[in-house]
Amino acid sequence: MSGDPETRAPSGMRLLVRRGGEVYALEGISVESIEPRATVSEVPGSQLAMTLVRGQVVPVLRLGDLPGPLVVGCVRREVIALFGVEVIGLQSETDKVPLVLDIEQCLDSLTT
Image 1 (cartoon, rainbow, N blue to C red):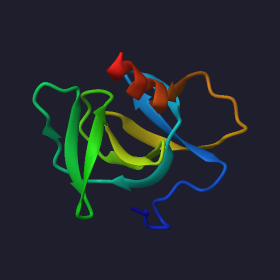
Image 2: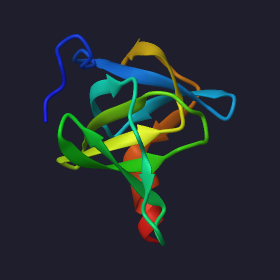
Image 3: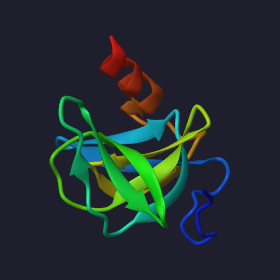
C-alpha cells in the first residue's frame, strides 16, 4: 500500500501525536497516510482491531480512546493503522522531543 504524496510524511520527518494529554513523536513506523474516516472493528479476544483502508484489510493498534483519524504506516514491513491519538503535526527527526512513542515496542508488549 502506498499513501498519497500529499499525506505521506516527508523523509526526515516524524509525526507528532497527542495521547493522554502528552505530546509524543512516533518512532518505529513509516507513516504512509492519515485516513480521516474509517470504521474500526474489534477482534474478539484480542487487543487489536481491524479496518479497511483503500480496499485492504489492515490491523489496528488502539493507543487510546480518542475518536479521530487513523495513522496508517509500515512497521517491520507490515501495514498497520494506529487509532486513538490526536495528530498534531510533523517534526524533524533531528529536533529534540520530550517523549517518544515507539510503535514496535507497543506491538512487542502485546505478545508478552
